[in-house]
Amino acid sequence: MEIRNIAIIAHVDHGKTTLTDAILKQTGASPEGTTMDSNKIEQERGITIYSKNAAVEYKGTKINIVDTPGHADFGSEVERVLRSIDSVLLIVDAQEGPMPQTRFVLKKSLELGLKPIVVLNKIDKPAADPARAEEQVLELFFELGASDEQANFPVVYAIGRDGVAGRTLNDMPSNGGASMDLSPLLDVILEHVAPASSPELLSKPAKLQAFNLGYDNFLGRLAITRVYEGTIKSNDNVFEKKPDGTTRSGKITKLFTFKGLERVETDKAEAGDIVLIAGLPEIYIGETVSTDENVEPLPAIAIDEPTITVNFLVNNSPFAGKEGKYVTSRQLREYLERELQVNVGLKVDFESPESFKVSGRGELHIAVLLENMRRAGYEMQVSQPQVIIHEEEGKKLEPFEEVIIDTPSEFQGAIIEKLGVRAFVLQNLTQQDNSVRLTFEGPTRGLLGYKNIFVVDTKGEGILSSRFTAFKPYAGEIKKRQVGSMISMTSGKSLGYALWYLQERGVLYINPATEVYEGMVVGNTSKGEEMMVNPTKAKNQSNVRSSGMDEAINLFPPILLTIERGLELMQEDEYLEITPESVRLRKQFLTEQDRAKAKRN
Ligand SMILES: Nc1nc2c(ncn2[C@@H]2O[C@H](COP(=O)(O)OP(=O)(O)OP(=O)(O)O)[C@@H](O)[C@H]2O)c(=O)[nH]1
Ligand SMILES: [Mg+2]
Image 1 (tube, protein in one colour):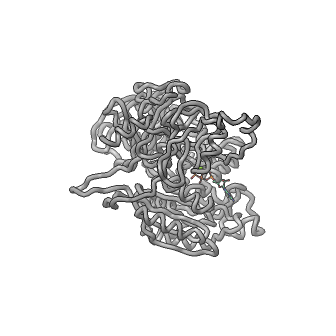
Image 2 (spheres, helix red, strand yellow):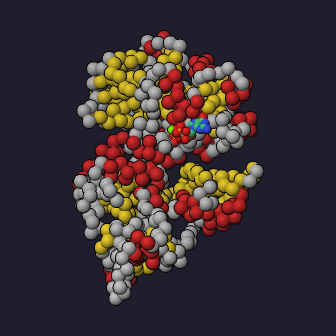
């Protein structure tokens, strides 16, 4: 069977997974109701975190499809995937037009010489403007130095959610056209994407390259590979070559291809296909696997440098060990070691026995790791995220990001002012009706802790997306307005009366009847100063006890801490305590006395 290999790429939320799911359903490759976002955390958050392979059959051709994550923290997943396929569907929301991640994934695709197919999606949105979006996409191609051939891209219009596509707007049912399904898109794929193999490639010895890793409890490490040449069989003796030529030998024990969302075992796979291989415990991204010892290794696949670091420590709060199953340093270490096998963007420094330095591509990357750990029964505490500073020729370099904001115009003043203080420079401003799009560049450091402020400043109506651009010269000291913490001075159960009194002074993180301990942070103060509070205090005892008092008082809903919110809100002298059931913020030193002592030193 002929094979075509494509990846679906886009900015976050532009509709990649919805479209992929619809393709799987319409081709009968997977039943209704299944989704490529198969991971629990993906489903809860409604975003894709891991790139995933699927395969469908259409008009006698096998199409391997890789759905990729659009969130910038997972951009390195996309880069690797692009090395394994022959073309991309660049999905663009017809209302939003190209966004930062659109630019990033398109740039990478063009650099690799791929010829994208552009899908203008979500044309059902009331404010969709496919003509304008198409114009912007074309501009972006030119700006990124596309060749004439690349810039002459085919365009398909789609409503992924309804599972319809058309080669022209007039084909769309919403415009009175006759298109009923996604076959126009699938036809364009067959016409436009080169077949993944040829008799010549098939006649050579087997040659594969690993572009992603997996893990199976029984089979151990797995590699997702593209077969470039020849035929690979299970039980083949192979040579694994690093890009520098270093060679190991090994044996393939099992092979799987993709069918729908499932992996199916097979005894051989031919040039052009994408297969999972087992049996090579040390295989790594970018390595070439071949039956021929003298094969020329394929070029390396670059893996992005981490940009932020968080220290992971054994939980030593007064509530340690109450909720978690795995709490020791050894257990944390074992988890992280396993994670490093598959979490490619991650780095861990195990040097210190008390705290492991975990580095990743952004706050979300770290937050997802922590979320996975707590769900697996782990408990730990982590320090405030810090950006990674590089030293180059005696110069300090730090990660920079591009930020694009869409907001109602009335909020732009506050945004420009606050990002300005955080060393972000406004680079572009475009007005459209009552909203503006602002483009900034500045240090990641300045962005840490800003997202909560942004939500407040735009009353939840602004959309902020950011992505790493490069390590650039250190932007100097940034004076952020500190939020002060409300610190519990005692241990016990919080009471409604006490919280009612405290909510006058700031924002609370806890509900009534929450167990607290001395040194735990229960809220933040609007004035910005640290404050010792007693959230367990009952109404003055000397008063006659008015029954029902607790029910009658009016409490604002607290801002309950999630892992991400905690990482954003926490101060440098605090830890975020994470257990299977709770997320708490605490001072590193629990008593006022110890804090004062630590300050003096
Ligand atoms: N109006 C409209 N909404 C759509 C369409 N397709 C998808 N959506 C919605 O857009 C949101 C994001 O869809 P996804 O398919 O998860 O987007 P994605 O590109 O896979 O997102 P990430 O993987 O997180 O980058 C969901 O709420 C979808 O229901 C469409 O054709 N029209
Ligand atoms: Mg998705």
